Length: 178
Image: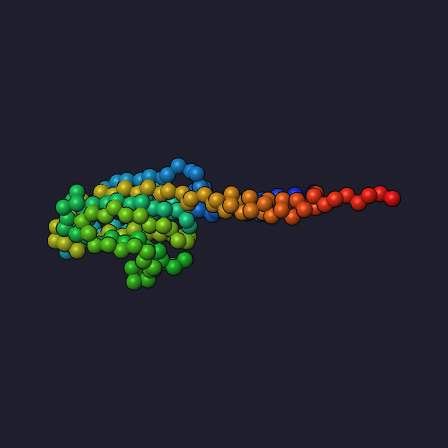
């Protein structure tokens, strides 16, 4: 009776230890990237910057947390448009009207976080609606998902139930032999 119960408990415990699919595994060090670029005037060329986050050195995956900071002209502005978005899979249409937006801001400085909800590819977009050029500085830090602690909660509960089920069986008085 003890061996089947032990095998059941171990089988349940091992089934709970399933790796999380993400850009990197829980417990991995953060991935960082930073840089800067110039956005031209709204009436000129290069007034926007549109790029895959992965081309900036950040490979986001489901469950990861992306910390991002950026500033326009060291935070003195004027404000620019920024968003994080994705386009439908296998799409060659990169119009912002044909995308899903996950984060959107109009500011001269942003310090925020975004938890990646699914699989990408994800993109960032900065756009300058002003008639002055703007120097944009950015920093991204990708943090792995938190480890799944379910096994540390479920396993002791399963073990306690097995012990409680087996305990009365050990305490039964033995029958006298005739």
